[in-house]
Image (cartoon, rainbow, N blue to C red; front, top):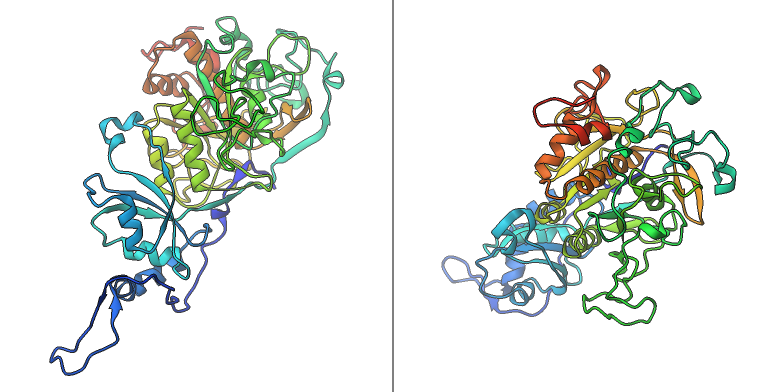
Length: 500
């Protein structure tokens, strides 16, 4: 099955009609419940027990439609007027505090400083649905959502994994590591393709090839990690100079030990090595080192990549890890994030993390071949001012059969079928998916900001969407009706004209 990273929320909604269990609750202030004439007294109940009893029907409704999540956990946004303190609110529900999220101010302006987002462990026996139902009537809580879980699914690899030596001598041209398998960068009709059904990379490279590591925009790769030892990537990864690698100490005091090469948001440490190949492939499309005479070339020959790993070794993650990853990117200076993952239901806390961020976020549209306007896909369907949702095309400028689409919720298309890029172990492979299309747009944004670092998110989106190649087969499929053209984006003049 063709896919990038797909949420387990794609699983059909679970139906559950059984009675909600009575939780094992902590001792709290008791109030007797009496009959109206005071002639009969019932067993005393705590306030929490009363609340759970009165919201039991609502809890059953929530449970019946609950997407996969970490049981016994909840993510809660407190209202800014809260005077009682998070600990007191947690105690009211018998919960314990797992973590407070550091939510940057970002795009939401002053609102970014309001309230607190917290991750709570519920008491034994209380379900997430019960807690959500009880919290709906709590005046101190803005929203409460599950800690949704996500699973990385298999993505399609086409052909064998290759070494740099096996790629050499195959009709390379400008630059000297533009392999002829890279139709996405420069399509001359090879392997049954259509001439110029590409992103016009060589034309764009005549204007800029990116900026040396540390000088250009920081591009956060929120994914399965990156093989930072890959010879095509190691020079383009922005290291944390405040950290001494592998000494077991948080040298820079940011709360993470040994985050020299990047951040593991799942394990909350510095282990960002990629074991699936997905994140490394994404990184290569964005910024495999250019003109080095071997392997492949990225859209940015030089760049500043920030690997942020959100998945464990089994390809699983949850909302809390994703929020940590987004927040880390924002607080550690990223200007761009690329997100080749998603699916399933919406999560308000993840949406807010994206919205608070100053970054422009590229998001894959999904690989189920369905209309996102009808069957939403997240995070790409979030209505945000600072995201770009990306569909996938093939070497003949046709929408890939696996690609999701949607005139309202998908912005632009980019090459995503049979894409050659880097994989762990210093090797190369061809993958397909909207996961592969998204980093093309990310790489293009990197070049735009290398050319003009003062561009706003709105200006960048306008250039990406209006500077693309308009294609009749994409009308009604993506909002721009276009496939990415990096050169067109660089030349777009905001008057509806592209210099040719």
